[in-house]
Length: 161
Image (cartoon, rainbow, N blue to C red; front, side, top):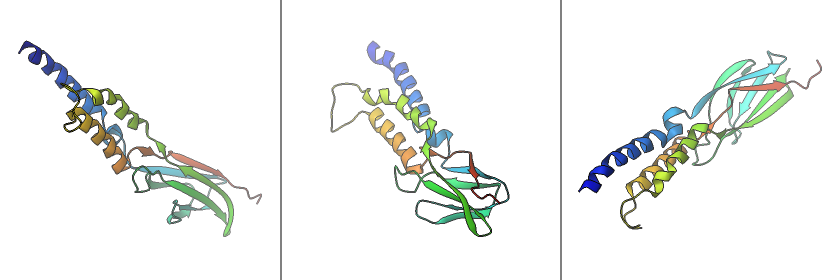
């Protein structure tokens, strides 16, 4: 009985830590990011397309656009192409891809709890921690919060005019 009572505080601390650290990107981050596009020189036309070729934005530089970091397919990050135009002629471009959000690594801190369980390993009845950690990682994948976009994109015009 004493052994069980001593494990309760450890279990509570472990569960609280797991809840706070797992699914970190979803809790502390977002899936859509404001991206400021600037050009040199400024006041050029800009067109932003995603990896499917859909136009996400048309306007002039500088502009701030809110773009999703994920493609919408699990585990897939989005890629955007920014094209500069001057007098309807393309004078520059740049492609960016989303990268892994640092908050996503908080899920790995919860990974030691993945192996915590009482009693012998039972594949039919996995430990509650195992289910929670895998579920929290999956939440970041599904919400697209595991990816992030840069705050700013700078494009240099290739035109000499």
